[in-house]
Image (tube, rainbow over all chains, first blue to last red; front, top):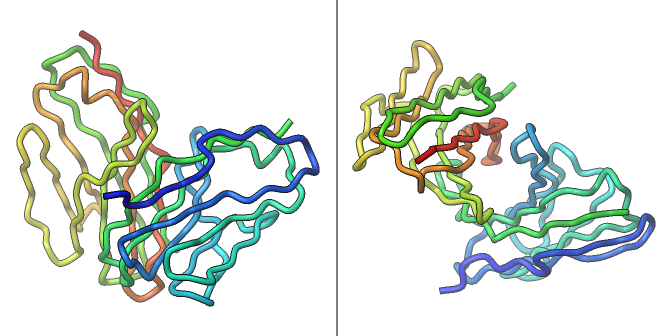
Length: 113
Length: 115
């Protein structure tokens, strides 16, 4: 019963490095999203996808790219990491529709030095 | 625009006290959904409850209860006889029916229950 799986759990990057945060779900959910969590600001939406091949920007998309080639996977790419991207990142998935509960991965703690 | 406010940044109570966490929301939609999530010290986000805008009945689940009032745009969460295991950050979230399904989260309330 894996649910939403995120890797890695922890990552330290130097400014300017690139990396991909992985997210996979096994619940056949159409909707997937990425959030970042910063102290005092709750969770803010970065990017989301309503199905394979369809992605869109959320509230704070700058500096991040996403793609959705399969229903299961929704990776988040940092092209050139900046200290402002130090945060905890959560991936979530749900069935399509605003009433649906979003299920979250365990999170990735990222530090950019 | 949609917005969720949780005015209480941090709350500390002693075990067995009752505590209420406040959530006030703003929405442009007539159909919407409200959620509460719990984030314990381990960091994962755990779903607690969902309420739709047409159902104003209060709900009780064990020591937890929720008071939804459309007249004041509030969806407050009460823990009765708090326990140390209730220590966590609690988030309120809003999803609108006619403006996409993206969640808007409040900033969270950190609850510390002291033994």
